[in-house]
Length: 213
Image (cartoon, rainbow, N blue to C red):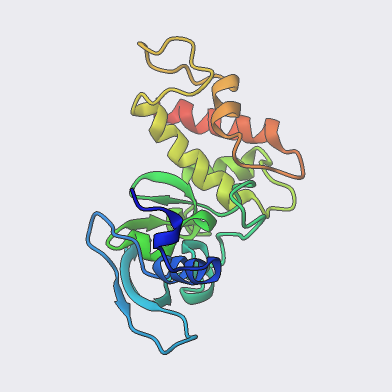
């Protein structure tokens, strides 16, 4: 077996090589985003195309661009909020291919061909989504900063329950989860409301779930 003496590489060279590898876009189910060569010291860019709120969007992005920044800075969909930027608050929650994700924790180039739904795609001021209307009716927000993420998360959460996906508080894994307050609070625990409107959010989600049931 070769030892460290056989490799003529120092720590600095190793870090530089690792950084170069990380600059390339990840492979996705729909194929890899196409990377463009860049001069030394310049960011690597890639072409990515995805469906956002029912419309196809094509962008040329630095491969390090998060989905959150692509939505806000490049597509100007500022309803999705940047809170902690570390995946801890849930303000940036969007729905990708039917599943809720923290858009600050994923790169845009990883979602080639995906269907992305933001708060702007759920409803309009003239025709609110039922969850948006319920949040208004039950005062499910105060400052409103976390509200887009709360609503996107709530909508996707109800679909998870319909699909039979259990949570940490689901008592019987062989039966459909009961939509009670404990289930809602557990499933929404990744979305933080600094104003503390949690009880009103639970009421809003319960109302919409009752209509769907």
